[in-house]
Image 1 (cartoon, one colour):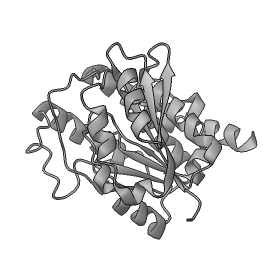
Image 2 (cartoon, one colour):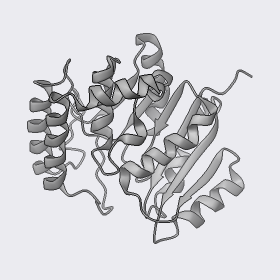
Image 3 (tube, one colour):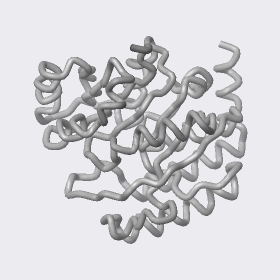
Amino acid sequence: MSRPDVCIFIPSYNAEKTLAAVIARIPDEVRERTDRIVVVNDGSTDRTAEVATEIAKEDPLVDLVSLPQNQGYGGAVQAGIEACRPRDPAFTICLHSDGQYPPESIPEFLDYMTKNEIALLQGSRHAKGTKPLEGGMPVYKWIAGKCLTFLTNTIFPGRMTDYFSGYLIYDRRALHQLPIEKLSRSFDFDFEVIACCHAAGLPVAEQGIPTRYADEESHLEPIAYGFRVLGVLRRYLGGHYHGLVRETSRA
């Protein structure tokens, strides 16, 4: 068997009801390429840690990393990336514990990244044929996403249909060159990652994913998030992320 080249991490906050199903949906062909699926329990107040521990007893791939206090979405992602780093995988995958993003798409995405030498791939809920409103996306989020994406496409090189999903796959180059530990600990972490990739000249792409909005509680404040996005764009234009990338390259 070839050396495992994939590491998966799952930032999880109060995910006791959905975590097991997400892990069960990871395709066998992906499991064959990884020796670790990291559940990052971000200070949950429900049984997320206990559920992850129970899964790990039956599934040798699953490891639990528990943060004693809630670190925010970005903090949980940073912890997941750090847990994967020692293995230096070719690909590091962020799955969400609520099941909103399909693990079944991973093989197709990895193949696309390999063939096209993509450093960061994002799942897009607005790509052609994805029908986000039929998938339950609230109209106000659809409108806000379209507006922010239009603005972002005038600033970032290249064009994408969705900058704001959390379904990201990093290749080795991205994790070696990006200042992960210096980025936001909030929900704008992923957007900052994309900004840093562009600042570093790394190729970024997207692939369509179905939209799934369930009844789980959202921990994202839309208005505050919108202002954070505008802040990222302002800092990008001001050269902030270019400077962070240069500092990382010199380290």
